[in-house]
Image 1 (cartoon, rainbow, N blue to C red):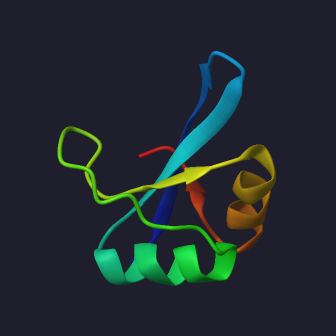
Image 2: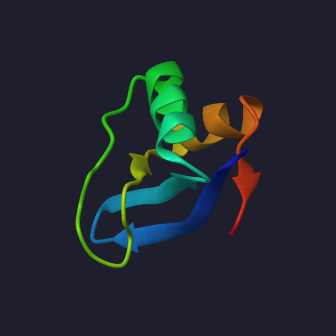
Length: 68
């Protein structure tokens, strides 16, 4: 089981990336570690985390993999 970092997204003045996982338990565990709320959006992105640059760095330290 793993968590995955998406590409960096530039939207106006906001810079962020998505984090997804193999299952919701993995996503919730990473959210807890990063102190981030899970976005339960319907649509093509599915459940994910929106991460700031600093949170992205922490997620990598906690074992998130690039891309998916």
